Length: 498
Ligand code: NAD
Image (cartoon, rainbow, N blue to C red; front, side, top):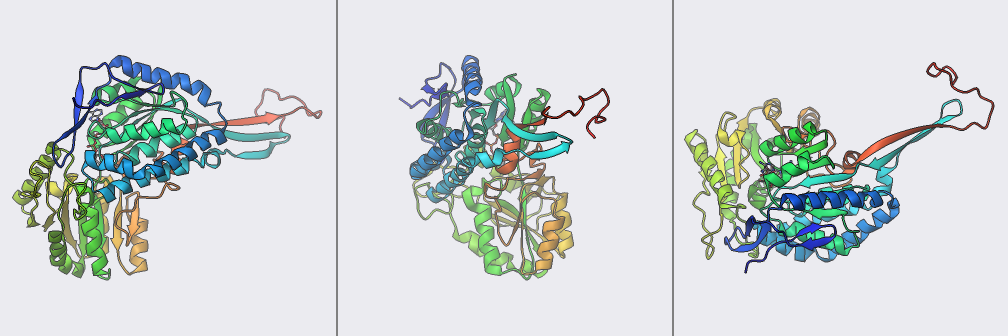
């Protein structure tokens, strides 16, 4: 019988009583790996109630004890990195090396959560008025919720719950129903690290379970990562219900190539950053903007694209894996078809891609378009496949105008040997994460993940200091002690404080 994934409620992995089970498949073979439950309304209620009850104790636990839990957790994650990557690569189709990277980028955030004491420290000022001092504290919010996408089933849950819990909150995680085995393994290791029952709950399901979290009065803050339409729905619903929300959404990332850039670096970076993980990364480069004479490199780019091929997660020669589902593959194929119909030049078409021995995989071969213009669907839509659109412009100013007109603002790169061009680009571009001669600028966890515009709804971003602000309230205390004969305060503001 197919394995059924449990829920994590109040520190126990429990079998769901649902009658709705969601098959989780290996996207290279369509083999069913397990079934995930769509948690019932009662199970959702139990998870939230358990998180609420656990918060009462956890918020009083000293910060260094909370930090030590994260130290133990990150050590366990490191010990089990390869085993988690193996689960991850089977349910996502990512190559094993890429899967290890997904886990590693999450471990780094858990590691950062162990620094929670210094991250949560407030401010003090003596003598804000005569004999009066002020200090501020940060205190946790209560029960926080996280809703995560399929494309980073280790890294993105780990962006959320370790920092939220280290800050003194409790957490309900609703992972993607497409690859829930990895988050469940992360949760098992969290319990093994010594987490008290109720600190972390894992519930499975889709829209119905998400909507429960967005509207439940005991959930104080919602972190979401996923597509634009769902992100907008989550942000609107959560804030309408007076919750804090941070929603990271879709992207269309441009790389600007100046004619003085190093050609070999440009070409290898474009291949890796557009096709890696089958283009299913929110920081993938999906548009290459060739400035001036650099357009002459497109032919060589095509040759390099033609050399790579997708394959199974355990194939060491595969450059990347399949699309997550047959529906995702179909969406990519439809956009490739539209690109051709709308007049783009398809230099390499991966629509008919097959992989020996794996006829049922959701394969799309590397696909390269030139002559792309901003009115085309392949330019406007997030394709989320191994497809790169080449655009040509004459000047850096034109490139900046193009990028700044995009509704998205997740990430961008410029490749150049000129400091002045790099300075101008980083200063004027309206995108939240910029790489200079670096293709995928995902910031390390002591910074924050700072997407802008249509790629982010909210104000405080993921991980780093911003996440700690997101998961805490600031309390400012002003105090005065009567050890002198200063007269008591009267009715007028400040008048007795001089
Ligand atoms: P998705 O929006 O389909 O799903 C994300 C989560 O929302 C899942 O947990 C899913 O169960 C839930 N969900 C789906 N439909 C829902 C609905 N109607 N109402 C409420 N909840 C719903 O996203 P995905 O396909 O899993 O992930 C890919 C998307 O995520 C891409 O658009 C990608 O750019 C984006 N992404 C963005 C970032 C970022 O940092 N900006 C990072 C990773 C992925």
